[in-house]
Length: 444
Image 1 (cartoon, rainbow, N blue to C red):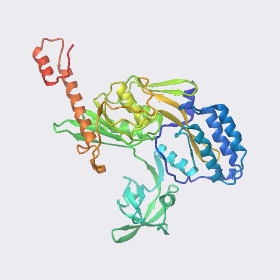
Image 2 (cartoon, rainbow, N blue to C red; image 1 turned 90 degrees about the vertical axis):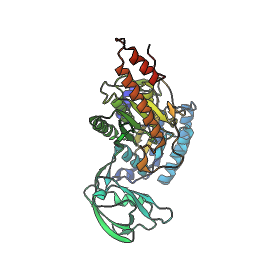
Image 3 (cartoon, rainbow, N blue to C red; image 1 turned 180 degrees about the horizontal axis):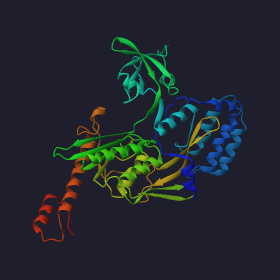
Image 4 (cartoon, rainbow, N blue to C red; image 1 turned 45 degrees about the vertical axis):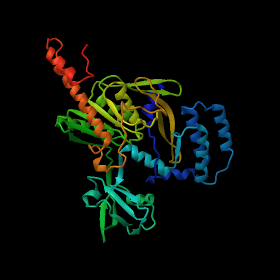
């Protein structure tokens, strides 16, 4: 099928957020087009003409042909003019997800989706008040972490280049580099400055975290949080579930809150970890070709499940939560999701820049188109009025988690009651006891 070939050949993803840029190391190909900016513009035009799925109903190929003549009749003196022209051209599509990305932005997206980067393993921010570059945290098991670098350390210089007035993009550009090379950081901790020489290596970006939470009644709950659906997310989720299964958890809370999405295949694989059979998602191309993805009979757990969602749960997050809801595999708790039911393909352009183009729409297993509408949870719960620290997310101090845990306990109790009742016996007392303890439980 045509759409199957499309999904295999192209990098399909479902992001709902914007991206900042990091410079791509190997950029030799860009120089061949210094005097041929129209080629990049026409490359974008051709991709849209061939593959764009119009969700607004306003796209007309005749108008798009006129636009091509208009933009190729002009002269462009540098890449900035050409890139501005591309953005102007794409604005006619009325589709915010079909976007042009300059080389730096495009490379950052590739890093985000690959789940890997080469560097030393630190996250940095620019302090607005002091204008300092501050380390947010070192990533565990990375050169920075192993060297003892800590959160709130300030970066004074990188390879003897002062960071005063330096923006984050330029700092990251200096810190990252080829694997096996070294970078020297001058750091300030409190009032003491010191140097650290770090060896750059490949860093895996962890998108999944997990832990065991114990309820007041002693039940063990497996908590799994997925921050992004990158290339490593499925394996990380699989490892987390297998670890939690070995610890005999009674059920799961899957946290997809503020997860902007990621790779389509990652969302399908992760859905299959929880859903044994049934439709997970169907994709519909611009030509009306439909492809259905189903469970593969290899779910890792059948235990009760609650999924936490909010307004920031988008695209790939909505595929997973929609599949779980429609298959009645678990309950959704939180707030209505973002509402992004469109699929983008990521294309590399002739000068190293990139294009994300909407190529399909997706439907939940029940055939629901959630684009712009989102998925309404089974139990609506607002988040804490005052923001809580990262360390309290996924604890009973987290209002939405607390509600999700309560619902999971109810599901586990009901499951246990059903398994204890034997309809082949005349155990009337057991039946009456179940009805008394759970008013909504019915025996037919």
